[in-house]
Length: 277
Picture 1 (tube, rainbow, N blue to C red):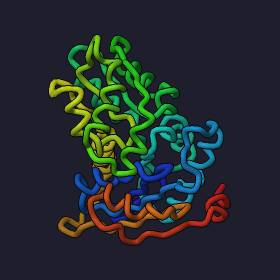
Picture 2: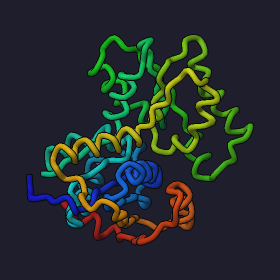
Picture 3: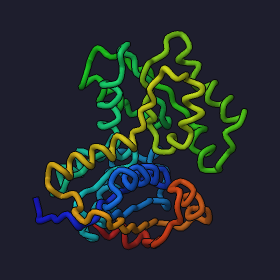
């Protein structure tokens, strides 16, 4: 492993905005850590792209983050975690974690009736990544998957948590009516913003597993094990945000997701990104 030090930033990337929820979880758990976030807003969504294309995009972004001298990379994208994580871990000499394994581990630990629900985008559900990760941990656990394609636009448009959102969720969650899981993985980084209404629809007995929070815990564990946690206690981390396109609403929506003003926002031209091999 190349020479790393505790004062370096953690790199985080996603195909767009959703990974900001992982950034928020990292800031809450590790307030002293510096973060560099990359949102590939020019090429979102990844779910409709081929595996080779997603791997190429993830490789380019990881190369960009390495140039910024990060000490670790967090793949805060379910699609990229499903198809590109192994490639990145084999090709880059720093710790790299995704969002799927931490969420799966937490759900397997939480379930008592050995029935786990997974909600996510159509591409994430289609990949079978959570199913594979859960069955690798416990082959006897039953997994019920449910794609929820309308939830991302509802979150990004800041739709009020009123009857419409509840009705949409109730429609999606009908799949769990016959036999309810006791753990439900929020398999998309947008979904934590709907946590309260999802809990209301599912009932208090169901443990909601936030992959972003679980990933932040995994980051803490990995950095601690490598003695790379930022030792500058009391000095809040500094954060930078990069995007490959600058949609009109990005800063406004990301600020809402993060719960604080978005400072240090920069655009990276696609030609620059695509020059990384």
